[in-house]
Image (cartoon, rainbow, N blue to C red; front, side, top):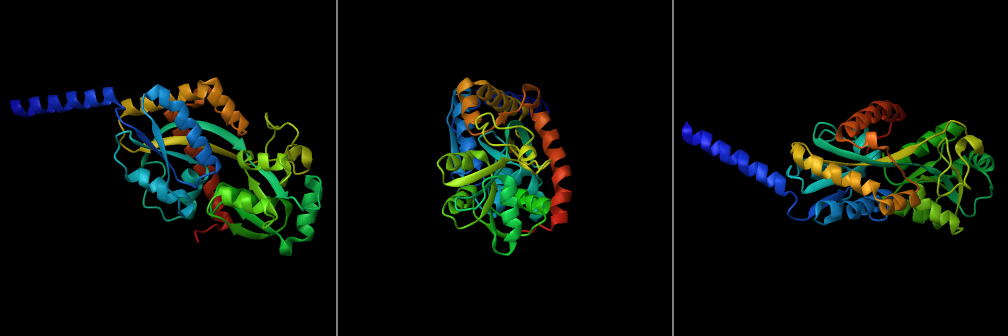
Length: 321
């Protein structure tokens, strides 16, 4: 009995030392979507911002497929030691649970680290579209609905859900064209191969300013800080049509609280860094306020988003293909 107690004490002490020394090697950040999309770009900014506060590099790995479920599943199965973490968002950590038969639970199989930022979608059309504002664009889409194609970054992705909501809001149905990522759908809009896309400003704003696409409105109740020239949907003629897109970090279930606390502290410090914050704002993101940057706040926020979006997604009949 005495030997068992000594062994247990040594194990507890060793575990405490390991947690205190964390991290002592590079951390892997899984991006469950393709290179060049908002999640990938924001993940790399956050990885850079957290590195000096952890004393170790954060290596970004893109693990794509099935609406992000392959990458998310990889993290769910990873060792809960703080060396594999996930950046996820509205699609990968909310919508997929209503669309795919997952072999993991989006809430119970992950340890929340913290929210990052949110951004609204933009309503964007191809350059050749014969419309100069949102009202004209909607009229054009409705008059030509049978031949209109709307892109998205994958079945069940935020852009897919936003696009279906847009069709419902204007009373028209288009052909939906899913891609393997936001970068691909944006590129095809620039090429003129699709007619309309609801996407993040992080991708579409630069193309709009370059004259490669037409941005008609921001799906929010206020204008973008870095693009005040683009009207809101309220101002442009589609009042009340809002769609925002948020990102956050998770670790596998069972990750020690001490490690979660270190990761959360590094995330909060990164978001307080003026340079990191400015880069996120340049990508049209709004950082969550300090009182919403705790692991507990992320857990509550994700749960509320699941309760909000799952009934809508299921009612729309969105299925994995």
